[in-house]
Each structure stands twice: as structure tokens, then as C-alpha cells.
Length: 268
Image (tube, rainbow, N blue to C red; front, side, top):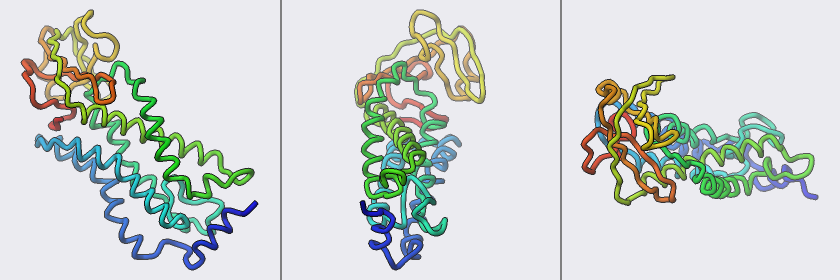
């Protein structure tokens, strides 16, 4: 059986680390991945409505594929799943792109969609597995560190790559389901029973019998939370989802169409 490390060394015998030109070329993309999405969050949080969600979706879904392209062109120099390992003579031999290009995925979970409620979010799992599997195969097909086989297969790294791909796939499915949903919205006015504030999240408890589970306790922007009092009415705006997974968000009443706020100052 051929040694994948030896095959890789024969394919790229002249360099131990990425050439300067390639390193300089990926720097702007890495900066976009690390700081572009949080910068949008800060700017929109200041009160400017940029409707950033198509751009955030493009960043989160597209940037890892730039890493895949680099890994395919230069598998000895770049990987989107690992940075140092058995086939690298020095820790700098293989440049990991996972942090830079997966960074927007973290902000999708923590910031940008925190006011969207998906009561049946498990419906996104098949799509998450599909999108994650495509990325895992595309990013790891020419990565001998993942597919070395036998005793040389690093199972821990392969497991991490699978989990990272699933994490990516779920964020991609969530955004596609919400951002590309062009269907008409259903509006349900509901009375607020009480307010709650836990771990940096502001939310309201709605009148029982209308919504169940998480949809009965939606999170709302801090400014909207301060204006609400028990007995007030919020408009629960619901859509069926582009991937068939329904989602809801609490908006100020009366809501007659138009902007749907999913973050402080940022609308869909």
C-alpha cells in the first residue's frame, strides 16, 4: 500500500510551507471570515438597518468553499480541517483554514438568528447532514491526514471534521430556510403574560394555548423588551420556511408586512 505522506511529498517536493504569494492572497479572505460577520452585527446593532442577511448567508456558506478550493489546489499546504499532524515535518507545514473560514458559522448561532424560533428545528437535520457531507467530502477528499487509512487514519481528526461539517451544514440549512423563504407571513397577535431575562437573553411568556414549546417563550430585542409590559400584545409572525421547517418571530404590533427584525437593528 502506498504511503500517502510519501505521495504527497512527491507531489509537492519544493516547498515546506505555503509560498508567500498564496499566503498574502488568502489574508483578506481570512480577515473577512474572522471579522466581517461580527462587524456587520456591530454596525446593525448601532441602529442602522442594512438588511445584512443575504450577505451573512453568502459569507457563512461560501467562505469554507474557498478553503476547499485552496486545499484542492495545494493539499500539501492547506487544509480546512487540521493544521499540524503526522505528515507535517514542522507545525507550519500545513496551514489550517478552519478558524478563519468557519468563524461566521459561530455568529450565525450566537447572534444573527437568536430571535427566530423553529419549533420543529429537527426538520433541518437531514439538510444539515447533506450540506455537511458535501463539505466533508469536498474538503477532505485530497487530505491524506483524514483518509490515510489503517493505523495512520487519525480518527479524532476525522470525527472533529465530521462534527465541524455538521455544524456548518446546520447553520447553512437554517439560513436557507429563513432567508430564502418568500412565502406570505401569517400574523397571530398574542398577549404577553410575563417577561424574563436569563443569561443575556430577553424574552416574553405568551398566553397559553396559542403556541407551544419554544414558540411560547420567544426572545426579543432588548429595546423591544423594555417597552413591553404584561398584558401588552405582540405579533407572532410565522412562515413555512424555504426548506419546509416553519419559523416564527415576535414583532411589534400592529405588523402589516415589511421588515422582520431578527437582531437588534437588523431586519430580513
